[in-house]
Amino acid sequence: MDLSSPSLADLADVAQPLKILDPLTLRPNGLVLDIVGRESARVRHHDRQIEAELFQRAAAAFKEGRENLPLTDAEKDDLEARRAAAVVVGLAGLTDNGQPVAYSPEVVLQLMRRHAWIQRQVQRAHLDDESFFGSKPGDSSTGQSTTSDSTDQAPTA
Image 1 (cartoon, rainbow, N blue to C red):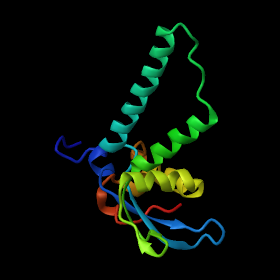
Image 2 (image 1 turned 45 degrees about the vertical axis):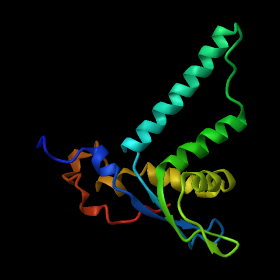
Image 3 (image 1 turned 135 degrees about the vertical axis):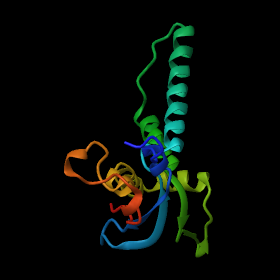
């Protein structure tokens, strides 16, 4: 291993286009989301923020002398939507009443909250190491290189 070779986080930070498929026809619907991989610094930062929020919630419950209740289904759904939105760094092909919509974290979060089927596609593609690394990171026995040569391929959902 060469110490100067790109890290998995470096490769995961390179956004990959994800063509969103219509849930009924399984054909691209024109929406393309640019997503990063699970090793990306952006995703790790998001995960640390969520851990801090959950810790603060537990600490507040303890301080008030009450039980730290499990998350509600709505809170779990919101965390999943926020996690999926954190993965998306760009978009194309989204409209609102026929007008193009520009990327913003708020727009993506709204999209994830309203359309669970898009959220599921993002989650699946985001966890697909082969799309970001060219092979599975722990799969050195295949002789495949974990270079960015095959990162030109769009993740499929």
